[in-house]
Image (cartoon, rainbow, N blue to C red; front, side, top):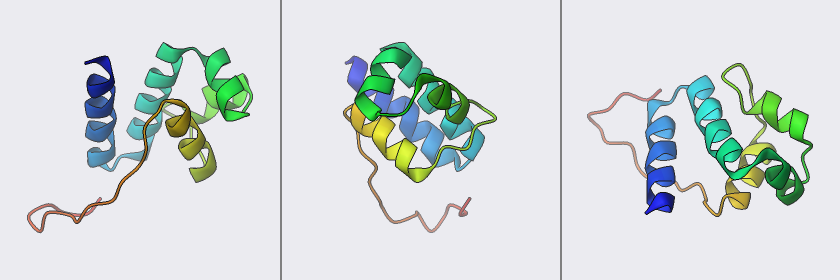
Length: 87
């Protein structure tokens, strides 16, 4: 499904551990939903969303959680595979 594709895309970004990539991917997903809609759902203005969710952005945890909630997804924690290095 489309939701599963979005989740796979975001999980890939999160697994990279690369903050600019994570912000950019989250921004791509948010833009696909419409930034006006995201702004209304999150209470964060559109320009702030565009800035935070760009490759050069650095969204706060608050913004990240608001956008993910607006997209109907959530963060989860799991143990790191001992064979993988921490980011």
